[in-house]
Length: 142
Image (cartoon, rainbow, N blue to C red; front, side, top):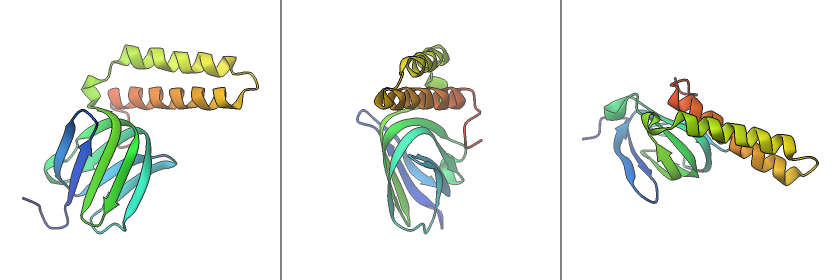
């Protein structure tokens, strides 16, 4: 049952519905930075980057998920997050994320004058750093 001023929040990947319930606020990793949606928010469709979705208040207070790429639709009374992938912090493999970070740094060092290779390396580094932050509980939304 929804509380007054609570938003219906759904987090969906191609494989699974991670969450379907109510929260008072949702923090999202937009492509150009984090944003927070509250009840009554103006309609918005945004591309997601890699980062942490955090829920505040309601039945999911304190829940966090690492998401990588996708879209979020924010309406005054609901938020729908369609992510390419999502993980709960305890599902993140720190050694894998650390190896990915090292791979991104290696690609960055080898990019030379190739702008596309720099972009690819930066995306890998960003995603690995966000995964590590979420796994270690030091994400944006702490």
